[in-house]
Image 1 (cartoon, one colour):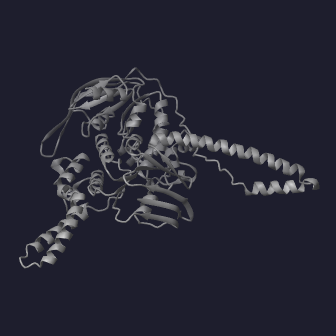
Image 2 (cartoon, helix red, strand yellow):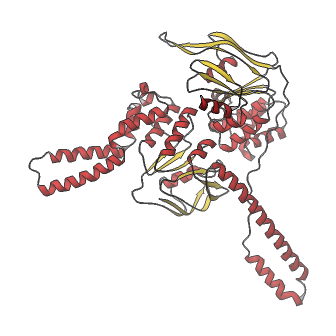
Image 3 (cartoon, helix red, strand yellow):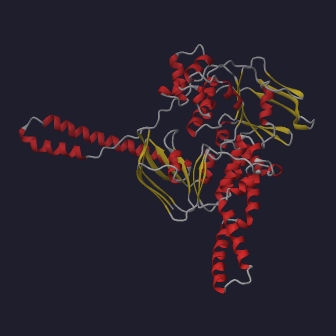
Length: 540
């Protein structure tokens, strides 16, 4: 369906990738992986024809319909959310108008029989395509998709310009899904989605009959949806048959094979070079020496695949603190809107978080997870009850709001210097390298950073302070898989207490020792880990 053949793409005078080649077949679910800046989004833009390759060819079967979801949603206004989604399937609207024209023409009593047959034939073709594209079910499908993506029926008639940026992303994603094309290309579709919506999208994509080509930071999402991985790294493109976990296993095997081949060749070359050096001056061995010189000149050298060096975060010693870290007693929160309507978020929450526990705070969107964390950190006050921390507890709090308090004109290095005044230059450099800021990147100004880069700066500073309690509200938002792995490794080694809200299921599987569920206005603390909690929920 889509064929990439010997494609090279230059960017800023350097090759992003060279002689890249792979295929996307009908109905195939393909994941695209690679470090930031390797060229993943460039591949998407090449396929949709937004940019051209410098060398090579990209071919697409005739009549292939492609829909593309990117992080740049563009302007949306003047329609309701439902109307905006339905407008995403422009071809259905065209066919609907075309069918209406044919129906009007057939109502003409003076229509010539020959012309009638031609109209009926064209009308039949249009009806077939209209039905194939879900034209007769367009509105019901749009309602199902937009509801699945978390926009409640009461908001279907709300104007799109009245939605926030994150909700506009969901509408833009719904516009792509409603097209029902032959190929959906998706650039980070799970950004801005909560866990319930991610699970819905996951099921929808698994059942989708067309092909998918996507990149995502959500490891479990990739594992469940894709069956083939395309890796773009170090200017090369490599194909792996299998999901993300298989890709990691196969890559490790290939790396060992590469190292073995490289070593065998190096050993062989060393022997040949020793022979040449030993007998180069002897006339009796001139022919043999010349033969071996030609031999090693012709050998295609095995290149050693070298991944980016992984550096672990050096965690500071933290004060021990008491056994009772967070004490919540009879806690309730009620919000009152501008006209006096009351919204009870939760009530009667009573529990104690103990030292060194790593608590996943879970619940459906709007259950009050973030509100609970804000009450614990004194960002907002409770309506009833209390949430207190022990007298020797030092708290580090991460939320999307904390990204806004960075100093825009500081460089990354200067920001860390201010937050860690006693740290040495070497420590700050090593810390930033662990969070994937290397070389001159540390001198980028904060105002030029993406959301994910800002999050890495905040987390780097937080993990290097002497906090013995970390309150983390969606710390993995906008972090790529490599950054998430760095953070996860640090949090697993961290000896303090953690309360975390995250929609990354793999992260919670690996980290959480207990689960605090907020459900229907109340909370329950489950003593098992996240996997055991999910099993319990399934059994229930």
